[in-house]
Length: 82
Image 1 (cartoon, rainbow, N blue to C red):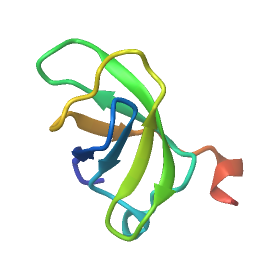
Image 2 (cartoon, rainbow, N blue to C red):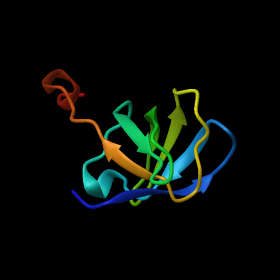
Image 3 (cartoon, rainbow, N blue to C red):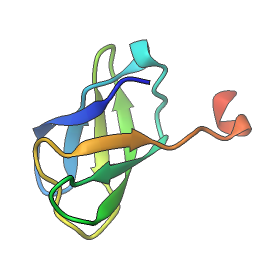
Image 4 (cartoon, rainbow, N blue to C red):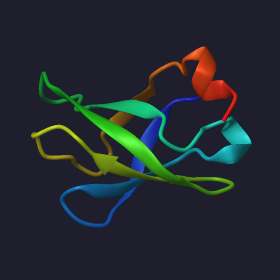
Protein backbone atom coordinates (compact mmCIF):
# COMPACT_ATOMS: atom_id res chain seq x y z
CA UNK A 1 0.00 0.00 0.00
CA UNK A 2 1.16 3.53 -0.73
CA UNK A 3 2.56 5.83 1.94
CA UNK A 4 -0.26 7.84 3.52
CA UNK A 5 0.04 11.23 5.14
CA UNK A 6 -2.10 13.89 6.73
CA UNK A 7 -3.05 16.42 4.08
CA UNK A 8 -5.33 18.76 6.07
CA UNK A 9 -6.02 19.44 9.75
CA UNK A 10 -9.53 20.70 10.54
CA UNK A 11 -9.18 21.00 14.30
CA UNK A 12 -7.33 19.25 17.12
CA UNK A 13 -9.23 15.99 16.55
CA UNK A 14 -10.28 15.89 12.89
CA UNK A 15 -8.03 15.58 9.86
CA UNK A 16 -7.86 14.27 6.28
CA UNK A 17 -5.50 11.60 4.94
CA UNK A 18 -4.35 11.06 1.37
CA UNK A 19 -6.33 7.89 0.55
CA UNK A 20 -9.97 7.01 0.04
CA UNK A 21 -12.32 4.47 -1.51
CA UNK A 22 -10.05 4.21 -4.56
CA UNK A 23 -7.46 2.71 -2.17
CA UNK A 24 -9.95 0.31 -0.49
CA UNK A 25 -10.15 2.39 2.71
CA UNK A 26 -13.30 1.60 4.70
CA UNK A 27 -15.37 3.70 7.08
CA UNK A 28 -14.64 2.89 10.78
CA UNK A 29 -11.24 1.40 9.91
CA UNK A 30 -8.55 2.20 12.48
CA UNK A 31 -5.27 3.89 11.61
CA UNK A 32 -2.07 4.75 13.46
CA UNK A 33 -0.68 8.26 13.13
CA UNK A 34 3.10 8.30 13.47
CA UNK A 35 5.18 11.38 14.13
CA UNK A 36 8.62 10.96 12.49
CA UNK A 37 10.31 13.55 14.74
CA UNK A 38 8.98 12.18 18.02
CA UNK A 39 8.62 8.66 19.32
CA UNK A 40 4.88 8.40 19.78
CA UNK A 41 1.86 7.36 17.80
CA UNK A 42 -1.86 8.09 17.99
CA UNK A 43 -4.81 5.91 17.19
CA UNK A 44 -7.49 7.35 14.93
CA UNK A 45 -10.58 6.10 13.13
CA UNK A 46 -11.86 6.84 9.65
CA UNK A 47 -15.26 8.56 9.85
CA UNK A 48 -15.92 9.44 6.17
CA UNK A 49 -14.46 8.05 2.98
CA UNK A 50 -14.33 9.91 -0.33
CA UNK A 51 -12.76 8.87 -3.64
CA UNK A 52 -9.24 10.21 -3.05
CA UNK A 53 -9.13 11.10 0.65
CA UNK A 54 -10.68 10.20 4.01
CA UNK A 55 -11.73 12.18 7.06
CA UNK A 56 -10.45 10.81 10.37
CA UNK A 57 -11.06 11.42 14.07
CA UNK A 58 -8.18 11.20 16.53
CA UNK A 59 -8.65 8.82 19.48
CA UNK A 60 -5.24 9.26 21.13
CA UNK A 61 -4.13 12.06 23.47
CA UNK A 62 -1.07 13.36 21.59
CA UNK A 63 -1.26 16.23 19.10
CA UNK A 64 -1.41 15.52 15.39
CA UNK A 65 0.67 17.56 12.95
CA UNK A 66 0.50 18.21 9.23
CA UNK A 67 2.90 15.82 7.53
CA UNK A 68 2.63 13.01 10.10
CA UNK A 69 2.56 9.61 8.42
CA UNK A 70 -0.35 7.21 8.63
CA UNK A 71 -0.36 3.42 8.80
CA UNK A 72 -3.61 1.53 8.21
CA UNK A 73 -4.53 -1.24 10.58
CA UNK A 74 -5.72 -4.38 8.76
CA UNK A 75 -9.45 -4.95 8.58
CA UNK A 76 -10.88 -7.92 10.43
CA UNK A 77 -12.80 -10.41 8.27
CA UNK A 78 -16.21 -9.35 9.62
CA UNK A 79 -15.38 -5.67 8.89
CA UNK A 80 -14.73 -6.49 5.23
CA UNK A 81 -18.34 -7.62 4.76
CA UNK A 82 -19.82 -4.23 5.72
